[in-house]
Image 1 (cartoon, rainbow, N blue to C red):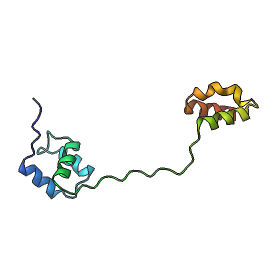
Image 2 (spheres, helix red, strand yellow; image 1 turned 90 degrees about the horizontal axis):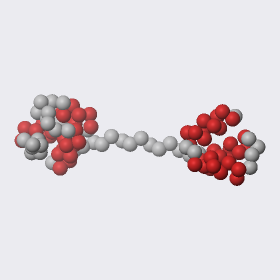
Image 3 (cartoon, rainbow, N blue to C red; image 1 turned 135 degrees about the horizontal axis):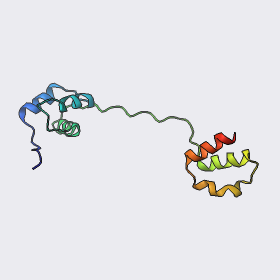
Image 4 (tube, helix red, strand yellow; image 1 turned 90 degrees about the vertical axis):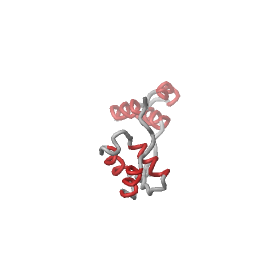
Length: 107
């Protein structure tokens, strides 16, 4: 039988006392005896449903470095080998990691 999904008044009071909640605080609460049967995700969801402030972790910013496509790698390999890029069309099915390793070994 699954654990009850009902939060006691003591649990909700503890969530309010920890406000504003974040992932680290929710993880610490999940390790306590009071919240022993609750997951971190459950604690965060309950806090949000009760209107308790939750501060989500900031997502890392995307890097502005241009992405190298497989077509670019195949073209670079063709130039390095003095080959016709059409003759290397089979390389387009290779993984980016394999093409990068091949390019590093050619140069």
